Length: 126
Image (cartoon, rainbow, N blue to C red; front, side):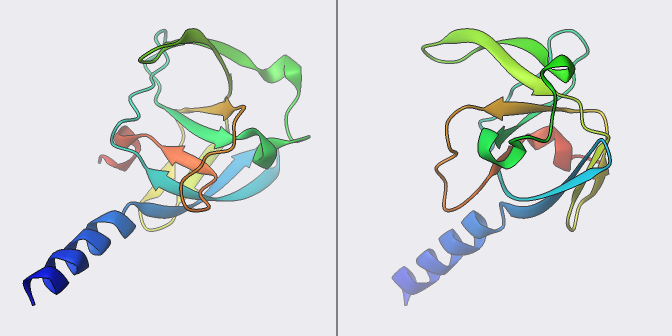
């Protein structure tokens, strides 16, 4: 009984971090499934906007290279410039509308249970 309850709590806590997100960018709507990653602390160093990561395959042919904003980042073993775009808004199902953020374009496929987007923790505040 103890193991059953422990596993049930683990699944409840883990799957409560999954969300459906609609991204609105230049009169286009992109539907993605998202995971709230408590380790995602990417922030635009200039305007302090949170950055969510979206797989490049989801954004293919939906943005122009002229609209790309390069944001410096630093991870555990890598530094570089992250390509970002500024969406009109995003709608997180069950949370609300967020506007002051950037979308980081992930060159690699996000490898978390079929998720296309990694959310920033600041987006769920307020």
